[in-house]
Image (cartoon, rainbow, N blue to C red; front, side):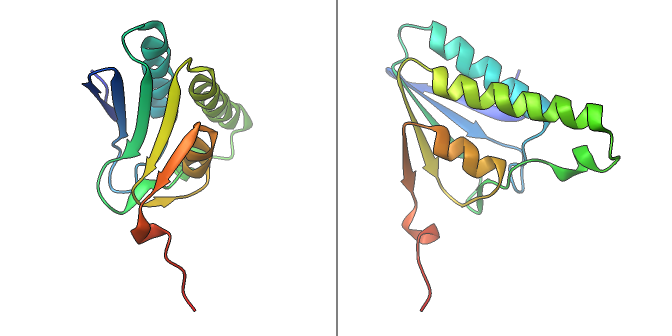
Length: 131
């Protein structure tokens, strides 16, 4: 059972919801779950599209959980960076269409996950500009 995301199937589509509230931070374990989920969906011929979104209504994802880097351990940082690379590659390698349904702030690595998708749908609430 996934701890950092949920998976829902709707016909030929799958919805992956990043769910590490409150900001849907991306941890090494969460990125590994995302990678494994995308690889499994890629092997499933019944799924033709994947939508990635965030739980809650404030954050798509605030990116990496910076606590992972607090100790200043370069080897630990390399593990996190490799997990990011694997997750982003799994999104890009998906044989069908990937869509980021950006429902809140998308920061750092969260924005990278959205941008690597084939398409993105941005909530009007988060696209407003100020004068």
